[in-house]
Length: 478
Image 1 (cartoon, one colour):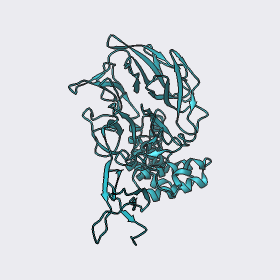
Image 2 (cartoon, one colour):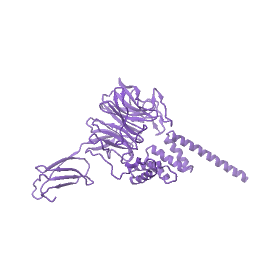
Image 3 (cartoon, helix red, strand yellow):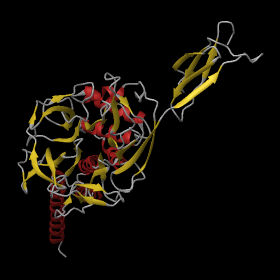
Image 4 (cartoon, one colour):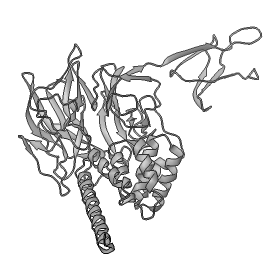
């Protein structure tokens, strides 16, 4: 074959290949921009294998896994791009967050420091870089968790118990709503379900579930009013999207009529330009807590509250910097005892989203509920299921679950009573007015007691912990 024709043929083949890869690049970016991350990853990986725009596509894969809350895969791809030139500082932050999800805390702090040095918003990571330990819950109760029986192979989360019925959110696709697949996760759109006394699961009846996402929810104490999250969708029609084409979340209200949830109404403080969701109603029905990324907040998503007076609503109030951070605060739950539980990735925790509490006794302190409530992944959706607050639920995408997110039953155990007697080691007689110091595992004092006339002392302690004791009296050396 003539060399000129061979060269021309090779050039044409090369141009055709480049055109094909360019077409795939546009397809991958379009999928990503449409939030179809599962599908986008497949196309980006094919482009990387063909060594086309490698660094860009590796970061897009990492960002997709970040959106899917998959630290194991995200870390693998971020590690390949963060040392490349001209990488956005946002990649350092996301890499650090995913490293936390893998419990690589020291390495995470290294990349948070790099982000702090180069980013425009260094305050975002100040608390996460604080060398002090996590502020864990000071209560003496102990927690036990186990997978709940209503879990499926799909996402299940966001429980609320009303009059003995457990309501929750699921992507199992069993509601009669012409189920479609949500491209972000590759699962059906979310609907609200409930459990019966025999343990069977069914979609809630009425007009709540649609072809869009529904849930989570909260129900009034009398069981007659539901507030729930849904995409901007009413009267079988999609609502207006924002300039980026996002159909935001809104809070809606439904009434229970003859066993059906009907009369759907949109709350007046919703917006087409930002999301409101995750409602939680106080026991008296006068205040609604919720999460929103409304402009003017402190971070990505903040927690707000709004007063309710019949069908009238007050002005939404941001809970401020004590609760909200430059990160994300979501899934508020206001318990009857006045404790506010919520999830955050801005307060210092064990990984991604952790569950925190602001108690009525210590409203100036945000406390991490610790393990086993929290893990290195996303933990959220805290709620009680019994009037005595000894039972409840959380949601998590931790390892060992059936689906992307799973519901876990929570048992709260009362503290133990520690009793003892201080005696003379020689004659065995009790020593009155002796001081007894109880220490924690870090050798910090947690209780100071004085023995009675019989040398006895008693106090409450948490389970599953080691407590060194020290007894002293002025007449004795120890």
